[in-house]
Length: 257
Length: 277
Image (cartoon, rainbow over all chains, first blue to last red; front, side, top):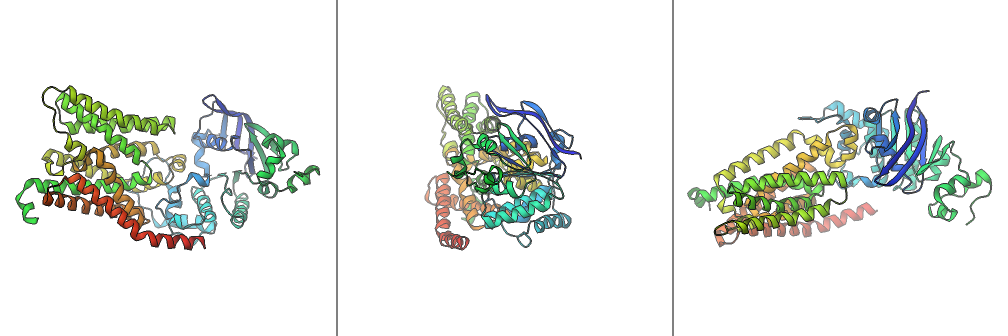
């Protein structure tokens, strides 16, 4: 199968601060990959490098065989919730239609019925039909997160990149988002940065663990060694709200602290 | 008042200047309030004083000096912000003071009697000249056209510039265009309310509008109308009671802001309650 994403010895540094060192892995077309790691482990930086926002200081990234500059038109990006201004005066439908504004500038553009139809379809897909006229500040956290997914889908991506899509939503919304992504992963490649170990155990098909370097890449089973390399100490695990089951299933030892 | 308008040209000029001001102010005000560029605008305005000093020192029209310096200042602040990210407010603060200092220095070094600078610092809408009026009209038309023609691009850029940049929207062009438009707006406002009072006239109408409407285009229209009311009423008060026009306009706009705040407070508290349920 073709590769959706090939990352080869990627190194990114901000000034003297190395954020990612020598990261190599690839994502098959149609794969559903979860990326985990501690805060500051370089997860968001990896996404930004893939999107071409951050320039790598070494190594290469290929998106469907092309450079980030050329390949990014195939990417649908769902940014972190907190990066977006939720009080901005814009309606739900308008947010989705911003995804139709590609390359260059668009003088005298008035969105037509076809554009609206397309945006409505993306909204219906994430279960936000009937919300189109609302202003975004009237949405709940979970609804807003799904709106961001709808916007990414409206840009017709082949690769969906999500940065912590369940970080600030309640449990019910989280389940909704996972079932949405599960459906999407049958149609396109999905790469999701997450803190959520339940997602890792239940949802994603492959897992990459980042802590400056690539600690683990493979099927989503966490060994105690990997988790320790990621987070340091098991006490830290409790603070992160990790269900014990994930570890116990694997090596039977579990985390009793 | 109407008969006065027919009789005195300076009053007609002042009224036109006030209306032109409120149009640019309403449109750009909404944008800078949403994009949180208020302090940057303050920096640009004060840097413009250096341009006024340059004009007096080298003997050209001070408002042109203000125009050149504020455009240069806004572009360099933009470049600094792009490359350093977080340190922009330090740079803004330094340019804010350095611009004022440069103006003071140049005017002190000027041979002969120092000119009256109050009209630049605090505005004097009653002394607007024909040339200034034409400049204001051109700036006003340019700002309106640029915002209107690229309205959808602006909206996308203002809401989430990172996402739009990934899609290939020319956000760098939009960003610098916005900075230049802000600088131009500042220059228009210098005559109306003066360098020191600019911030309130830019933010008060937009902030009041944001409390009554959730739509960007409606906010722009409301804040243009509010600006027009403030400028006209301030001008009338200034003429009738012989008080400084800039101060009258600013105090009125801030007073209305707080009135709207108080009037919508109950309503907004109710909205919060519903949200929490």
